[in-house]
Image (cartoon, rainbow, N blue to C red; front, side):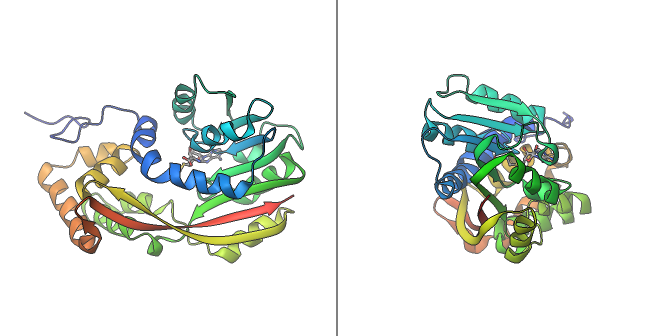
Length: 275
Ligand SMILES: C[S@@+](CC[C@H](N)C(=O)[O-])C[C@H]1O[C@@H](n2cnc3c(N)ncnc32)[C@H](O)[C@@H]1O
């Protein structure tokens, strides 16, 4: 039987990339980092909070319980697919979270509308991060707080060095480049300058170290593929080539294997600033 692009032995991709992101990447990776970011944001009861580039909404939904009914939470993102998953996950949330389609570089909100703005792992994807940070400054009240996290460069993420290299070898340069894209070559001082130039005061940039765990290298590759535009090219590979890809990642991550699968450090900058 010939495998269709969306169905090849053991690598079915039946969900949208947004659903796969929510199912596979949010619980082991984005949820724990969301809790750290929220802790840093010092959100209080009654605060009006904006989650910029909210994706499937993990920061917005976790922050909702902190602001209680007297506060409010809005998540904004350009991607309708991500927002649809976000809305489905919060149908019964109290207080309710409002989901809005909008661009981080032109936020659809009036000046000084929020007490806290959070932005988790998204500035690196925005075409004009300078404009995005200026917009965060504009929509915050004087004295309001902005927190943002951005992964450190690829060299600090061993699992993704291995995956990006193997994708480049077996799928192509574009696939390798895509897997490197979440990890910009920014350092802490680039981020500090970005935020200070937008007019923020008391800017603090810290390096935070976490980890991510998967039950096996094969699952790591499959879940990352399903949650990205790489789903089609990877499922379309002949199974022998895919096996080689997985083997290359397994070899590269041999020292990160344990009885529960694989674990890899992940490092991020966390920026906190006051308007
Ligand atoms: C890696 S995801 C992070 C999502 C979410 N913050 C989280 O922690 O799960 C990056 C998100 O940035 C969004 N994004 C990229 N460019 C954007 C822009 N210019 N304006 C708003 N959202 C944007 C994408 O649609 C995607 O949902």
